[in-house]
Length: 238
Image 1 (cartoon, rainbow, N blue to C red):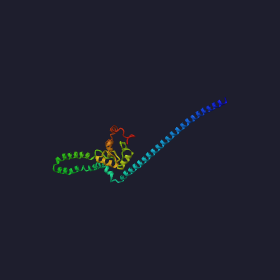
Image 2 (spheres, rainbow, N blue to C red):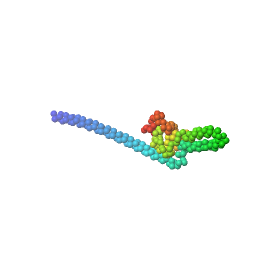
Image 3 (spheres, rainbow, N blue to C red):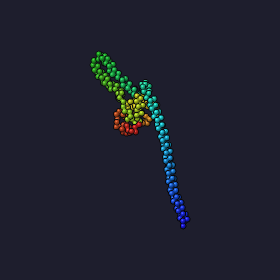
Image 4 (cartoon, helix red, strand yellow):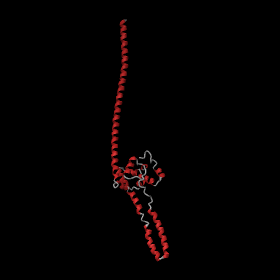
């Protein structure tokens, strides 16, 4: 009987030991799995950190390049005879046409000696001639006044109301001497090409209708501007 109990105790000890070892082994495998998952997560985070560092470096290079281009573009603005007059050819031509029309009232003055001579020769016919000369002089005065006066010097408009002109483009345009809606509204096809070549644009002015927007704002047609360009002046402006 003693031998039987010894064998039974041995078998029970083996079973208990096998059960405990099985549980410990399962927990050990679970811990190993958690460790592998932690390592893979760490590797993934390192890869994301490297990718974000690369993107940050690329953004820094892009910013430095934009700042360099902005300095190079704004540098010629100190020379009034370079690009600023070229961008405002059409506006300057309109401004020069106004003073050129002032000598128009000289015609009635030239007509007065002729009227005096005719008065000496024919006193009865001098009054109708003088009456005809007066309406002609009065009719010539409105023609000397331009239909649309140029904006006052030094008074700048808010160019950022136009779709496509944000803070950067606003600064670039001011560097070229463009500060009013009337200047943009008066651009010709040659002016648009010159501005796009200077600012490295590719058809953007025509694509975003800068000239059409400026014409509406220059004439004060706010209702039509709001109807045609409802997104102007919003966060998506530029």
